[in-house]
Length: 229
Image (cartoon, rainbow, N blue to C red):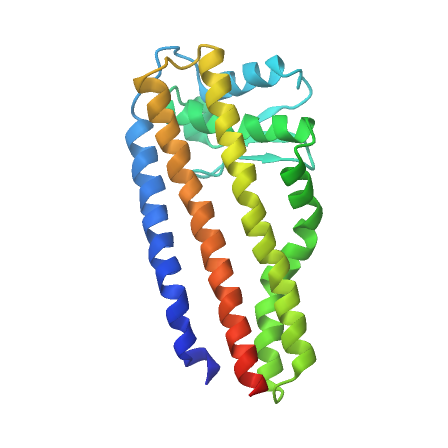
């Protein structure tokens, strides 16, 4: 019966916001991926130059399949860019490439939120997969408090991970815009404004993820309280 509990209503605002965030990032990227930067450089070229400017000569820039699949892998120390970003010469391509470079710079400088996020990732990943499952399994087995509490604890690590992701992403975007303008890869004004809009739209997805996780945790606490009544 808990699967149809009224507390699902708590998640509705976050679900709506998540849908909006996905629409926003897709529409904004689609708009600015068709606006080329005057520098004429590709995302791969910009990433390579920015990495070199930060003495990260040993971090390769690789092509990875998919759309908006761009990421920096801290374990392999590799920056991977999607085809549209890798080959693209647009404001969106340069903005995303610089953003991922920002993560590489964070890693090199041991940026504390990123370091902490990487350390808790194994537990957070476990919490996202097992936390909710153990929580409701506790109800199935007659309100097993140990399993319910263990599920909440594990899921809390995932919530903390999503919240910790916010400063990591915002900082990477700020670093990206500074590097792009100071290096002259984007002109100040309409060009850097367009790239920033792309990064701001992408940031909404992380905000939505954190909001959803927080509300889900709140819902779990409410159901736990009902179990104790």
